Amino acid sequence: MSSIAERRYRAQILILSAVYATLLFGASYVFKHQLVDGPTACLAAVLPALPIIGIFVSIGRYLVDERDEYLRMLMVRQTLWASGFALAISTVWGFLESFGVVAHVEAYAVAILWFGGLGLGSVANRLTFGQDEGRGQ
Image 1 (cartoon, helix red, strand yellow):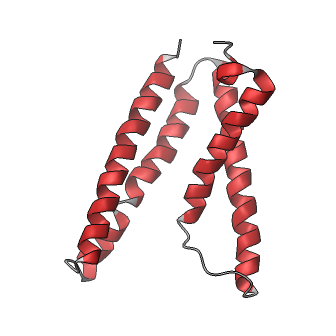
Image 2 (cartoon, one colour):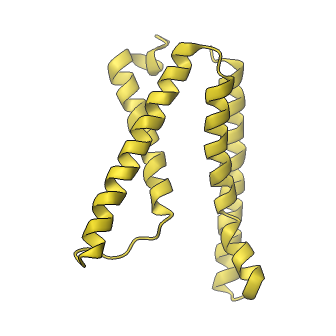
Image 3 (cartoon, helix red, strand yellow):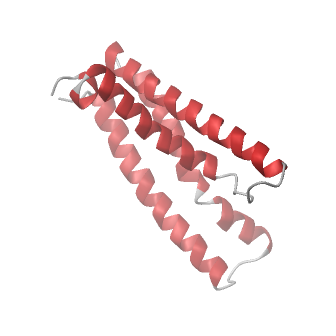
């Protein structure tokens, strides 16, 4: 059974993910068809980032709202894995890029790495604490 905070968090993530996909497809479409320029282009380019920022806020809110210390600790562990993974990979890539060894990668890839790190953190929790991130379910 999940907590109220966890259910709210999951609902927010689903909604924000759907909004992200919609805005990303929309932005891709208007740029592909050259339908925007100037300030409107800046707005269209920034819109897909907003739900991603919302996901970061939702994770922070979950950590504040979760009353079960054990569940909160599991999410903290996941976010630490995510942060360490994203920072390590982006730092190494940055040095490789600065010395001309690899191609440039867009900065938003750090968020993608971070979300991948959340997955690694979830796996680490399961390996450390057992099935279903330690809840024994």
